[in-house]
Length: 104
Image (cartoon, rainbow, N blue to C red):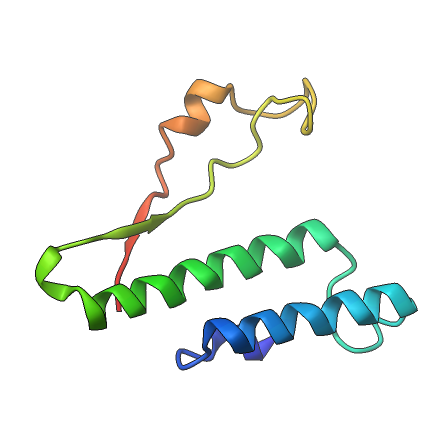
């Protein structure tokens, strides 16, 4: 959804947006409203956007402290949740090659 890409999105607005998804999913019409058919994926993008928002806030309020907020995805890692067919070991997931620093 395009609204997640809004660089001026506040934490409060993100919470409202995520609440919209919850309500739509409870009503069973989330896909008709343009939401994905996965609560996991939707919450994952919510956490990623929250990281971007927090990085932006840190840049504005504590720039002199040199804080870098990182958000990364370890990929499909063999865990109780992903199962034994996942491609990466937990150790490989911890050495994530797509690690990217986020700052505004």
